[in-house]
Image (cartoon, rainbow, N blue to C red):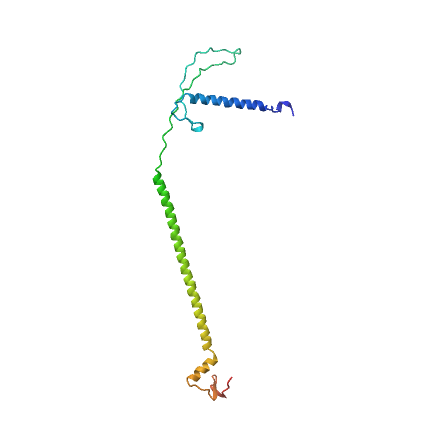
Length: 192
């Protein structure tokens, strides 16, 4: 790589000195702006700083030097000095705090009341659901008891006992009727 493309290395001491010079210059400019301000007026720094009013001050006439080379002319402009008069900060805008706090409190109270009503409705539905489940269980038990009773009443032993209770007796012969031809057959009673 050739020397003409090489980047010059910066000396760390020179960088530190340059930074200190810039800091001193900024500090002296700041002191110049703040020094002439009224002591009772607030002064701010940064983006919200109070901008000083500038008034041109006439400087004594300076001799204009002509350079040795006729290609360029140097023009010296008179310097202007800035007078600083700090403008007072605007009065703070007051927010109606009681109305704001009252609104926030009303919002919180309405939210709590809404949650309470919602919780009550949910619990009410839960109690109703529990009652319906209990009632369904009772109905299932009643249905099972009725099915058991029906199956007991449908047994041949029960039917025979009821028939004897009403005075019925076993027949000696049983008659069967065959429909296509209409013939009848009599068979003696069998206990089976």
